[in-house]
Length: 66
Image 1 (cartoon, one colour):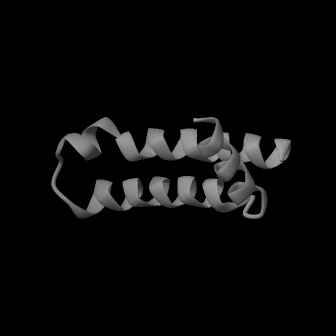
Image 2 (cartoon, rainbow, N blue to C red):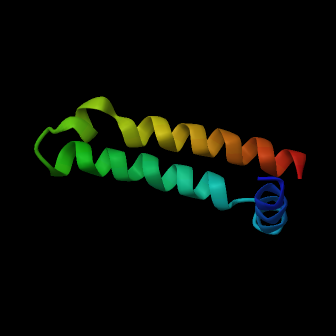
């Protein structure tokens, strides 16, 4: 687990905007799905919205720390 965390930290140190960008993309996908498809559990629960928000916040905190 420690080795994985070291590799991930080294990878993200050079790509500080990657996680916030992935979070924004997840939020945009959720917005598109809200209007493009019929309601189903993914759109009614807003799972991608919440996941994107968490990923973006964690990405910003990691970018600030690294």
